[in-house]
Image 1 (cartoon, rainbow, N blue to C red):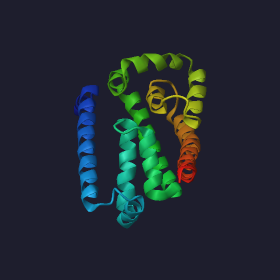
Image 2 (cartoon, rainbow, N blue to C red; image 1 turned 45 degrees about the vertical axis):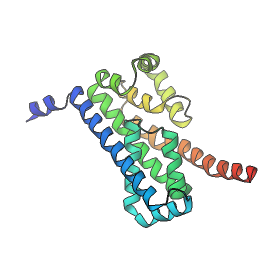
Image 3 (spheres, rainbow, N blue to C red; image 1 turned 45 degrees about the horizontal axis):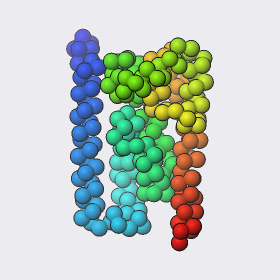
Amino acid sequence: SSVLRLNVMTPKNVRHLINLATLIVVIALVVVTIYWYDLGILSDVKVLQSYIARLGLTGALFFVVIQVIQVVIPIIPGGISTAAGVILFGPWFGFLYNYIGIAIGSFINFFLARRFGKPLLTYLISEKTYEKYIGYTKNQTRFDHLFTLAIVLPVAPDDVLCLLAGLTKMTFTRFFWIIILGKPITIFAYSMSLLYGGRWLIDLFS
């Protein structure tokens, strides 16, 4: 059975699973968007927020799953999905659901890279992006510092660096704590800037 699992879990098969997951997510998003449009709730943010609130845990879980998937498979730009969390659930619950989804997605990226290596990475990211950042992994101490900085201050594509971290000698324990302690800073700052920056723009042009 172990041999069978090794044969099944190959980079090629994982790529097929990712393609299938991407297709399912895209279809689900289209269906949900059309359904919400038919309900007439997309034209009013407060109505949409009220609708999401009535969904309760189901709505929260759906959003977290979408956020996990967008970290692993960048179908939706991270900034847009994070903003959606703040708009739909408010700054505090939006922050929490964004944090949970992004953290889980980051852990998945790490394990995918560690398990399947470069053959899978060059499918998830472009060869150009891979070559641009792979050089940083040659010095483990330097990469650890860069990775920590990128997680706390998004100065580089941290999803890519999470994948690259899986190729290095970084332990999962260290990776775990960098994500757990560093991600809230970025997500909180981003959520607050969306909330108060949006209000400032509304007041400015109203």
